[in-house]
Image (cartoon, rainbow, N blue to C red):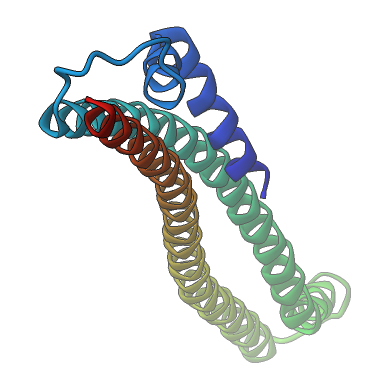
Length: 207
């Protein structure tokens, strides 16, 4: 993954800038090693180099994680916005379809009131039907709005859960890359330590 390669590159740059690389080269290929340098000195130097590298690697990992987490959150927010917009359009269309028949019937009743001669009883009946139809439209609208709210909350919860999983996966990947890089660096230090111990033993044998 690009994040892993960038993590390793960034950590290498940090080491180079801080001078840690020079310290490592001293362990791997020193110009000279005084015979008075003991095993305790070598171990202490190795521990110091490893701790310094680990701290810089941790800083690089945190920077990469923060950057990638921000990208994931922005992408997730956009996906959520798109999902909400699609839901709004879908529910608006559904409401329109449910109310079309009722609107047509209301319009028909209103036209009859205006164009047809009706006695008072028939007028009251027509007005009652119109009121009932309007109540039905309000009930349909309330039902659709309730359905929209339920789906809206479900979409929010789903995207929130997916966002958490994405960030956890990113965290695991960065940590795994850091562990692998630290293990590789530790192996290099151990090899250098073995080399120096062999040189000390050889010097002691000659003496």
